[in-house]
Image (tube, rainbow, N blue to C red; front, side, top):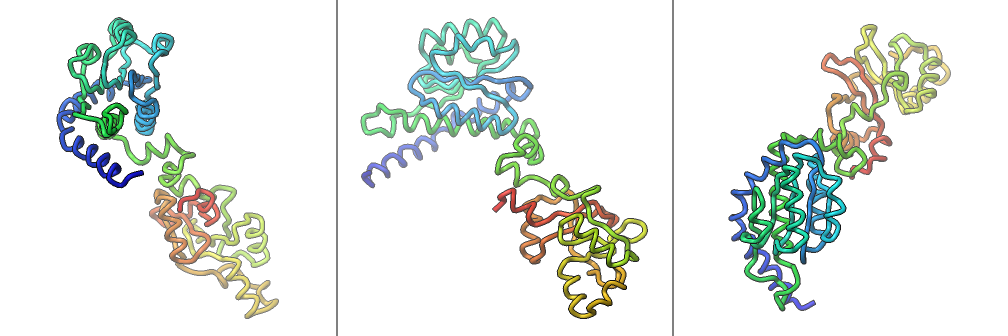
Length: 318
């Protein structure tokens, strides 16, 4: 690829971005029809706009809990059964003129649907029938022949992203909402809280301060975390005992360790975190402190659970 050509293409797209402010004012109005809806929204594209562009736009909206279903030119009539009265449709069409669009518009009006359109022809049939029109026109494409949709598709995606982010803010979308909607995705995993990952209840290793060492061994072996919490009588954290602590005790005291209690070998004031800390933050802390487990406590230092380093590694947070 010619370096001069690459520069010309990027310059063309950058120039269009500088003049795309015309779309921002109506873009704020277009949030209204979308933000009030709870059901599906349909994204429709026509003409030369490449199918993956509106598909990417649909994915952007879906990440923000504003569902958009992609309809390609030639299939809209068959897909009308998926629409419901009162839905909103986001149309992406540079030219805004085909016979199929006209038929689609009649059905949309009959269903009392709101129509938000991204188009390069603000006087087209589609634009005239829309509730909100977002101008994504370009003076020329980046293509040397001014034919292939290049600058126009980039601008359409940029304006669509601006609309999606505006919708996010209008609906009060939070990181917790993203994690709840995308628990298996890499972004959703990074937003998980330790309270959703910790070993709690019967899976939590715990002993009392006066627990005999043989029982401590049994608890650690049964829970398989390589450690156990040591609790005060009221349930607050007194300390922890790890495999490393036990090895050091054995090296120093030999068989006498079996006569000891949990309080004799525990590490006091261990590192702790709260239940609402992000899993990624917990991982960073554990790697920084070079520890394999961390105790999750409440505001009163009551033990809620334990997070192990291996639990965080499986999330591939790095």
